[in-house]
Length: 425
Image (cartoon, rainbow, N blue to C red; front, side, top):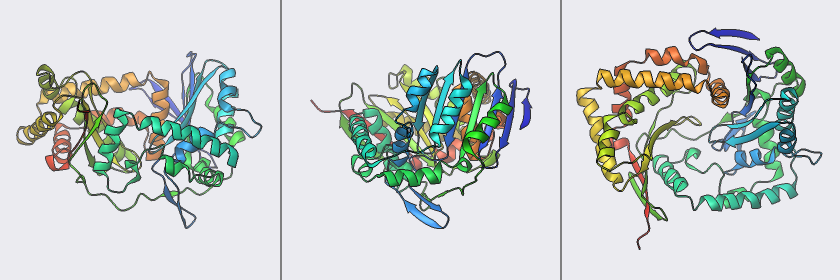
């Protein structure tokens, strides 16, 4: 394995690509009691149409999430969650629009737990009976989500922004879509997306990188499968389909999300730089220390339930700003005025420097979280960059870049506002 030192953050990274295509990152942490491992596939809820060896394959919404649920079942009738938990591990998994991650943390039994993680994720076992049973379980989960205002305000926004990209649809799918999933569907998607050539293994803890490499070779073999090519359809317009949508639900206070989409850089340092630039720009514009937030908070228009994010999933980039407010349309107007102020006056140098220092600090603090480190490394491997390279890139971002990002991507015509308001009495 190749090793690389990062003296600016006090880390050392071991990395390699195995003959089967698996990308492997190991961060040794001598003296630490906790070990963390993430086994991730570059496959999420938005990967519904793809090409593999010249064939186009369409699948129902919700297959990636369904697979995540079923992967813990083993052919001998055991369940990997139970085995890992009995061996002292804390296992779990998640599916987003872009990736599926299986992971555990433990303080003992690491080698056995790692072997079990690699084994169950690479060993599909589905039957018509178990799939039918799971359809009922996930259908209940989906129906419960339909009553969630947080889910509704988010997916309403995504439908307003995206015309056809599957990122607009719920990762879990719909009751109707999951009824079309069969055990043959699951086997086909597992074969396509759960091949080591489409996966990454990232580990952090007091571990031996050479041992982890040997375990991966032994558990996953050397065969290299072709990587599926996702098809997300034609390129989307940067303008939203709809600028305003309201929905009435049972809420104590109105929820709102303001969103915009951007052209996402797909790989390499350009992709990492865009992600860092986006987060720094949003911190300056509407972070907790910004004039925008401070002013609206003092006026009672915003409360502490306010945040911002930018999601780069499945080839998309989506800016999301929101929280609670009795006057969400006023928040949108004030945000638009703030963007125009940046356009005419630029960003104050003091605000830029303060936000950059805060972002550098939060980036350093995130290194204390083993889960964050492993997931960030895995996503970086899929997107062609190393997450540990972020510090010098972040330091090199200029105030002009932030001004251009804000004025280009948050122009009034690019914004959509999703509101969930209380039902009329």
